[in-house]
Image 1: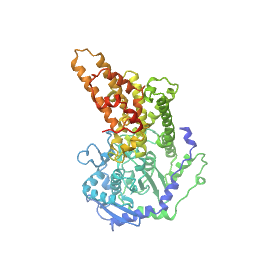
Image 2: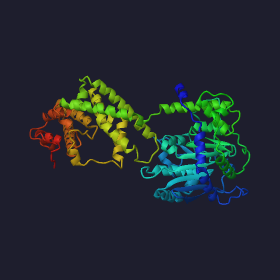
Image 3: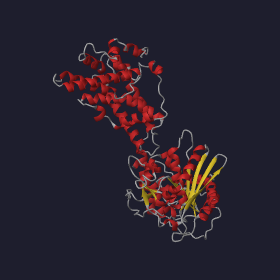
Image 4: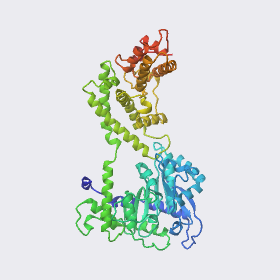
Length: 587
């Protein structure tokens, strides 16, 4: 982790000032006030809450505002801290099941999910209207209305085709935390979604954003809080009249919110006027603090940044907090450094695949085929191939695992670029795994030996709505270079060879066993011929040194002289020579 200390740390002040000066806060807040429409601070707050929303259309931006009626304050929320598990509303209200990852559950603030469910049918229509509009969309809200805005934005993101539409921005003012650690992780594991959420919290005037945070000891570095604790997600803009700061680190956000002394903590004063005043003041005086303003010399950017963060939102006696924030940011930077990034290794992957392509060509020139060449392990290049295979497999296992952890729309998995690269990898490398498996006297690879990541890559290809299928004429022109579509083809060949061996040694009296083995072999014949008719197998399978041709020799000795089938006709009449050149015409 020490190496991370050499990196420059950004305190977030620059980003915060940029957001304020952009006018985005002022524009969104003005629409919230319009949606409230002449609120009365003296109105009694003992009425039940309901959600109201209003859509605004600007030149190229649509703004959708969510508020509560009456305005939600701390007194409304004090008795509704309860989190509701996704398993509890899975049957009755499964709208957010897409956030579940591999069966993991999450929990949402009871009041927020209840309001969302109460207005579900109207929100469903609103969602459809948003989907039909191509303008940029800002979804905003205040207090509990911001919580509902965040749930609505997640619902939009789940069904959004980002190739056709821009992602919405959800901007929440003074909202309570929405969910637990499972909810936070479901969103943060998809960075493109996490970046769509911006929380604005008036730290010294509004206690609602910190209302559900469980107090803890600053001296402790135990980050594994209870699963039923509320957790921040997205980005936070923490502000007061004198300045603002920005943080994407959820643990640091929790510390900062807890450290602030909220002036109205014991009152139920409304915060609507507070945000109007703060936004106006921040726009008129964007505070740009420098290192020179810190009382004592600071030798690294991490200490300087955390110090400026605490000063920007008027946190006093902050030395212990600064130390804790430094530790949290170090952990965050360290984890980012370890994070698996598929794009960074893409060029290396291409080189490894090119090496296997070269190996495949050399093996073909030797009339063996790369499957059998690798299985026999006779070449001095096999050791390099083993290394390439291991590297590629580790890479794609992590890609698949990372993708499975992301919440996403059903049937939408890897982007096409990654899915097709993964398909090429699977068709090139899985046969090598099969060779290893049967070299060690394995049996029934498909059921007992196949890796999970191959299964998922194949499943996702089948479910990809955008995959492009080669036409038969195109494939016929490339039979000499294609990879076999079914990456388990060689496993079926190995099983067929085992059946031949069993049939040859089976006792004559074991009629039922012999009949069963013959039936399996005839089914294998049909399977192979189907692949040939679809031009889905590489011509390499017909090389004289291949395991497939070895199977044929073993099988031909077991079948009756009068046995005739499409496959026996194909091989005995050497039609595979025409197949390799793409000149074969099949009925």
